[in-house]
Amino acid sequence: MNIYSNEIIKHNPKLKHSFFQLAKQTFQLQFEEWDALGYWNDSYTVHCIEQNDEIISNVSTSDALLVIDGNPFRAKQIGTVMTAPHARRSGYATTLMEHVLKKHEQLDYLFLFANPQAATFYEQFEFQLVKQKRYSINTSHIQFKPSEIKKLDFDNEKTRALLLDLLIHRLPVSTKLGVLQNEMIVLFHLMSPWREHLYYLPTLQTVVIGQQQGTKFSLVDYISKQPILLKELLPYLKVTGDLIKFLFTPSTMNGMESVTVENDYFYVKNQCDTPFPADYYFPDIAKA
Image (cartoon, rainbow, N blue to C red):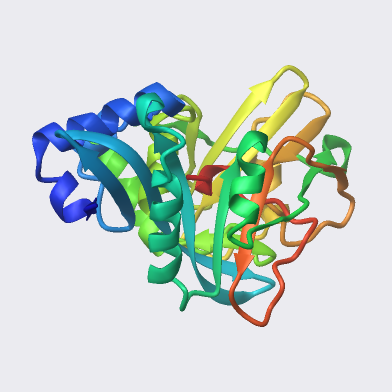
């Protein structure tokens, strides 16, 4: 049984198309534009089993340098775990997981987001469920100030160049739990679903991803080369309503409320001496 990776799949049009089709059928993922824009590099690696010019099973890995409580940790995120319906229950996913785990046993962490039906599959490989909390703040704690905010057009080539430059050189969104060296995964999310929610703050030279939904504002991420505290950023946002939800873990939590996340199955395989912390929130925009 051959396991094919990027060097084969990316350069074989038939196999690449088959991989894209399986991802679309399984997860409704659209990889074509991401690939066409040159965002598929070796920071996202597929591990595929092929049969008769068809990709029948895959496990992907994505680079991630995790910043946890201010310290860096080497990691890989596992995702796009899928098998074609006619090839399921044949052990292909197990074979690929064993291959990936052996290849990356020198890293500090391996992690993934699972659906609940697959929990026992990952637990057999010593992945453990990590409880998360999501944080929010009431806008009454923020003194907003007039500011210039420019809406960004992802279809503009200069915008995409700005985003890529900021992502490559960014500081982590949080010292509690941040992710670096994953710019191609973030760009995938910026294409969809956050394509229409990209803004630039000239005063802070910072890109903000956020969305107003009724009385609540979701702050997805902010991307900057300079150290900018969350309390410095929030007054510049255009927020209506009474609550800002953070889709990442704030560095400081003074004055914030938290809720336990019940429907996000975050699994971690710890391969170092530092236990992965509970009650943080892995950034939505860094999920693969």
